[in-house]
Each structure stands twice: as C-alpha cells, then as structure tokens.
Image (cartoon, rainbow, N blue to C red; front, side, top):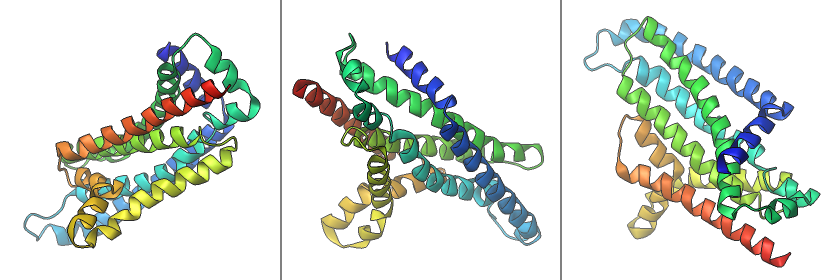
Length: 250
C-alpha cells in the first residue's frame, strides 16, 4: 500500500503546474550558478597550477554548487509539502483517507516517499552538472558522492519536517511559512554554537548546516548520518501521532 500511495503522490506532483514551475526555476537558477562557478574556475586555473595541494574543480565548483542547492531546496520543500495534509484537511478528503483500510504509518510514509522521490530526481539533475565536468577535468568522486549524499539527507530531513507541519493547520500557506521558518532557524542556529559550554555544543548539534558542511568537505561521519536519520524519523513519528489524534477526534 505504501508503494501505491507513493506512486499516486509522485504522479500528482508531475501533473501539477506548480511542481513543474518550481523544477524549471530551480534548474535554471542552479545552471546559471554552475556556469558562473565554472567561469571563475577557468580564470583561476593559471594561478592554481603554481600552488601545492591546490583545490580542484570539485572543491571550487561542485561544493559551492551544492551549498547553493541546499538553500534553494530549503525554500522549495515548504512549497511542495504544504498541501500534503493541510489541503486534505481543508477540503475534508482527509477523513476519507483516514477511514480507508490502511494504517497511519502507510499513509505518512507513502506521502513522504512520494515527495522525497520527486526531490531526489531534482538532486539527480543537479548532480549531472558537476558530473559533466568529468569530460574535461579530474573530479574527486569521493567528495562529489559525499556532497550528493549530504544533500539527499538534508532534503529527506527537511521534507519530514514539512510533512509534519502540514498536519497542524488547514491552511497550506501557513504550513509553508512555518516549515520555512523552522528550517531556516535550524540552518542558522549554527551561529549560536559559538557560545561556551554545553549550550554551544547543543546548538551546534542541532544545526542542519554544520552536519551538511561536513559532507561537502568529503568527510563521512556516522554522527552526521545518525543526526539526519533521527531528525527524519522523529518528525515522521510526530506526523503519525498527529494523524492518530485527528482520527480519534473524528
């Protein structure tokens, strides 16, 4: 049943003008940024040749591109997740869904995986840009794969938060604003991690940016992986519990 719901959500996204518009805007913006980064790298190539252990095309093109892509996706995800449950609550179709012979876990995972599948397609298209440089330059495949993994984990975590917040209101716009505010707060909380003691370490651990930057440096730490998995699992669990509460009230 999860597969059926996932396929339905993915099909609905590709039938939506909003999804295609967002996809076109994201690809156009990041393609423009990619060309700027490539041009900057070409201008620096002469000076880099005289340096020992000079950064390569992966460090100067792929990593900055993925950093910009993270910002773009954090703005895109709230617009995609805002309607998942809030629209169905507003129109009353959620009651029909909750009365269907499927579990809350299947409903939540199906909708979540549908959104995530669409976003992974977006990430795959983004990854093709730096991968195209392999035709004329030497890429650090390890760093590139780490960046793709980090961007995928960040996207999965942000999507889980968006799915949960869409259950809290019947207004999609409110869900989008709340999701965007939460994600930006967790991204910028890293600035407060400079505080001494336990408080600074706690802020640093909850920072989406700090864990993501490690992947862009080519560093694979199980702590970062566990953070994103726990983040996603926690919000999906909250979503299931919220839907159970809504079903009991009805």
